[in-house]
Length: 102
Image 1 (cartoon, rainbow, N blue to C red):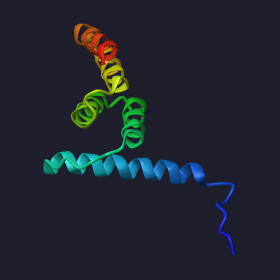
Image 2 (cartoon, rainbow, N blue to C red):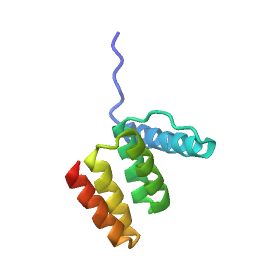
Image 3 (cartoon, rainbow, N blue to C red):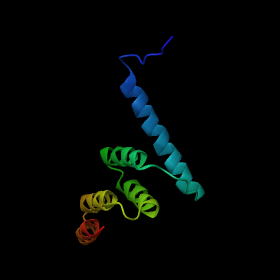
């Protein structure tokens, strides 16, 4: 017999999964571990941090992502957005230029 996902409650599971990924990322940073994370997971955590105005954590996340994916222009755009939110406009401009060069 096939298993079907319920029509309701999926959003809560999604939120719980993102929170679990945030916890995993933060524990990884505390331990100094640097395990692989796919871009989709990085993006979900990034938007969680932005939604909660956790800009230092968002910056840590994007820097972590750039170590894994140094030629991914969207990470430079994301870091530029964090810099803009925190008033670091010169650094934002530099990252926008880097994104265009990748």
